[in-house]
Image (cartoon, rainbow, N blue to C red; front, side, top):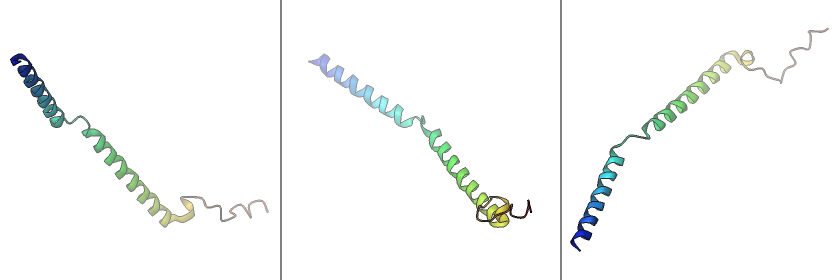
Length: 74
């Protein structure tokens, strides 16, 4: 009976020690940082493209609403 109690105490100690190691570790920290960087890059890129389109209009992105080649072959 004494040996069984010692064994249970050792198992509990091992589990507590393993839990402390997991909580103290920073294994998944870089994934969050990378995700935030990607989101920031996408937002800044969209703002830049929107600003360029607002400044230059059809020069940046071709619009099919207009017939640009109408007088080229006349």
